[in-house]
Image 1 (spheres, rainbow, N blue to C red):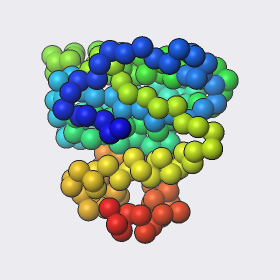
Image 2 (tube, helix red, strand yellow):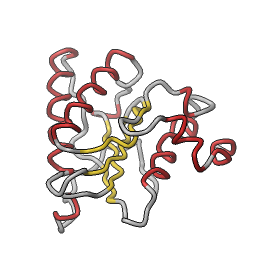
Image 3 (cartoon, helix red, strand yellow):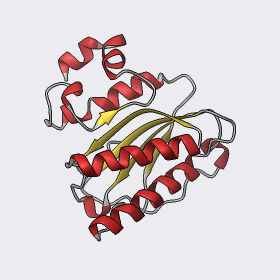
Length: 174
């Protein structure tokens, strides 16, 4: 079922099995802005958040396979790098640090209360999920090709290699 970006995410319980959020696993998450405000359209805002994302991913031992700051939400494809990597602690820390800094700078709330998560199966190609994520600005008619979008990136892969490695025809169809 596709995400309904016109509504705020409901506060919902996470998976009952908290082990699904810890360890060497892949995740696809989406974090919406408060009241779907389009905060991610300015270089200074997004660049600040990317710096926090780098620090928090290092602190919580995660690879940021792909990030994509859409105008009113953030997509992340992440992979825990150790048995102690905790997605819930990572997201909490990232939202807390960035939310505090944003409120201090702009006197506004940054994030919606909850977030959407999907634990990737071991058989899923995390690079494929990353390519799918990078196609979001194209699907939203913000750019014609993923590399044109200034607010996507990876701390692990060269985007050009990632995009063109397995699916150049995919992007020609988007």
